[in-house]
Image 1 (cartoon, rainbow, N blue to C red):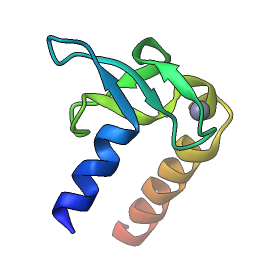
Image 2: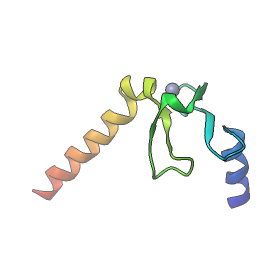
Image 3: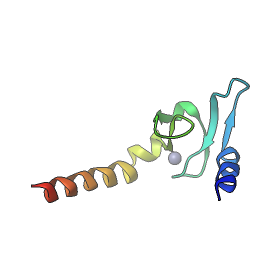
Length: 77
Ligand SMILES: [Zn+2]
């Protein structure tokens, strides 16, 4: 399983000779985009979000995260 995931990881990304990310496929719109189109995210292996800035600004992910946060707060109080 781990080896398969690694294969997919490199299939969806392009790196330069220094190992910096040049391009990757956005999980939202499934298009190749330059690393500049993604927000930096240190939790992700390549250092960038899986969703491009366009997809994030359209709502999807951010709204979902916010609603989870609100839900946790309601539960907590
Ligand atoms: Zn996108």
